[in-house]
Length: 175
Image (cartoon, rainbow, N blue to C red; front, side, top):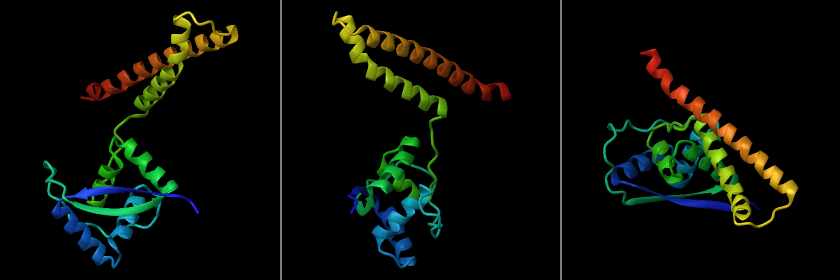
């Protein structure tokens, strides 16, 4: 049996009442209704839920005092986590947005995601570079690979930054 993961989401009393009413209208337990809503938002389950009542325009949230718990399989949680990260939200914030009728949007363009990936790769290489800098002898073939890889990372980073800069200027040109 696959291990499951769980997390806790806090809601304000008004938000909690909306969720409770929607779950009751669907004749489902709150936890099951929450899990279904989250998975549908992540395009994991193809069916559409009943719509929630419209929320007032965004404003500073009231103190979150109500908790609703649900459980996911590891795969389901990974899908939710991936979507939440793409939207630069925590899983709890992503679920709260989805459950309350919002559709979170991925905020990071592909070029920015690639820049982050290149930066991570460079950070992984940094310990080897530091060893070489401190005078630790690295095998010649390892040193050649590290040098080539660093050069490629720098070229890729520069190309991505140029593409990202050009993409950010395009809306200005359209005006």
